[in-house]
Image (cartoon, rainbow, N blue to C red; front, top):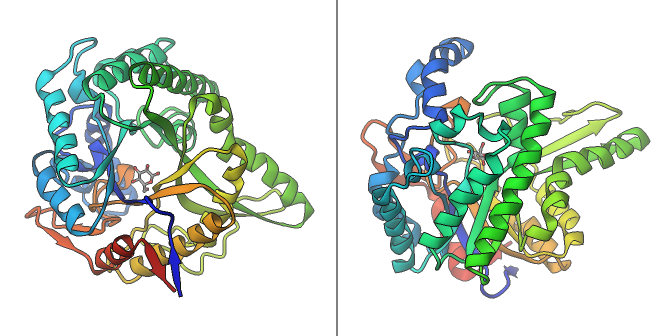
Length: 400
Ligand code: BGC
């Protein structure tokens, strides 16, 4: 049987600047240098300090055309990437025209290949000057972000899909300000609350700025959406709170300023009583995350009430052997299709990621790519699963 996807469905993959470009200078590059030794030790020496330094990454900054040729050969008609804020505004209020021109070329390269750009304005890294002013904890952060967004939309008026922020609440605020696992490495409830508030204000301000310059634009943010599963009364009540905080809080705060919902889906979380993370973990990825394709259906259904178009802005698996990726994609698409057939307005799917890349505080070892990257030679090799996905894209349907 063939499961047809809606006409005009957008298919592709996603990346983010810091994870693929190479040679950035931002808050992360500095944090990596300070923490690489510690992270290597914490891995019991399994991964050397170099694993934790983004360095030249995939050199996508110089090889984007070649990478987009690959995306085209895989039939992709959409691609999500992020603009590296620290490149275009390396000093406060000073714009680097050369870097702006770089992203103009990136967008042109996508268009020339018939690939629709989804532009993310902020995927976690910030310029050092902004970090020094307190980053997202600074009162003026929404203003700084608005100024950056305004400039970008002015430079790139033909972009129709803007993603302001990537996973602002969970993952970013929690990891950077509560768990201390991402820069600036804080562990403060108060700061987390302040940062969340500023991110909401930042998104809303950027939305107004973008729509003001380009009323046609569709603007949203990428929400990390977790499938909470409950068993029994207590955990069902707990689930209401878990959903309200982890999945819907940021969305509710920004709903009037979202033209679509960006849904990133990776996680299933089984609740038992008041306990979190009671997963069976029968099938996991290389990073130990349980694979739960049905979860994408549940989260999509739970987003239906907001009555907005939904784009799956990330979904992917760390799988270096490529033994499970094809099945992973197909199963997630089967459940996505079920949600669509029950009236959820899903309009696109962007696999994470086009290339293997720098996986934040885990470094280079997890392999999420449709395309394998040899970090010594920077050679790209298209994985078998990428071809299986390419067939689905070409036919706009999934054979089950
Ligand atoms: C992030 C990506 C990351 C992926 C896999 C998402 O939370 O947006 O940057 O690489 O998860 O961990």
